[in-house]
Amino acid sequence: MEYEVRFYFPTAKLERLIEKLKTIPELFMQSRCYEKTTQFDHPNSEMSFYSKEIDGRFRVRVTKNDEISKCKISWKKRCPKTKATDVNQEEEVEVTIKYDEYDNLMFLINNVLKMKNIESYERYRTIFTNDEIEISVDEYPFGVALEVENKSNSKEPQEVVRKWVKILGLDISKAYRLSWDDKYSQLCKSQNIKPYKHVTFDLPMPQIRE
Image (cartoon, rainbow, N blue to C red):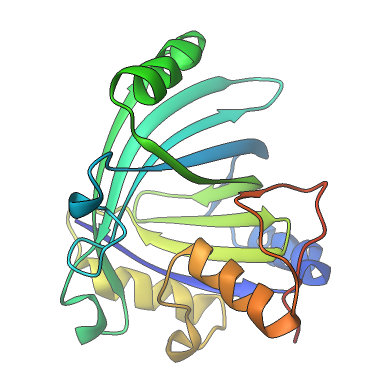
């Protein structure tokens, strides 16, 4: 089970967020990475992952910078009781594969399993971590997300998340409870901007505002 919360900010606040996290001595900063995530749906519409009953995301993600190149398949599903508390509870299963097998994986998904390519997005991710927490700063084409996720195996996970949200000076009641694609769709609708299936930095995008 995964326990996390997520906050969104205007892109203009990116540098301020990074600098604030750098001042916390308990955190180790990892190198900034480029990520591309593609999300697929079940080939049978009656078993759609996007239905209210399932509400899950099947994802293929590549992550790379000058030092690393990796790929993983993941399944993420919101738990029915996730809104019972102020911390998201989600089922997450991940499988890591070799980066150079990415093309073969996509061939199997698209041409053999016939899964539906629903959407994709680009982002840059910088991770700050220690034994109990992982804090990710995600640069999307439409704004910045800050994700606070429990990594402790010995402490109460929701309390770990609340502790670090407090350290960061954030109000947990203002966390965004839905997925990135929900946020993007809401922004497009509110700002009257055409939504794209593939969200990339070279396309006209809505922007998170104060």
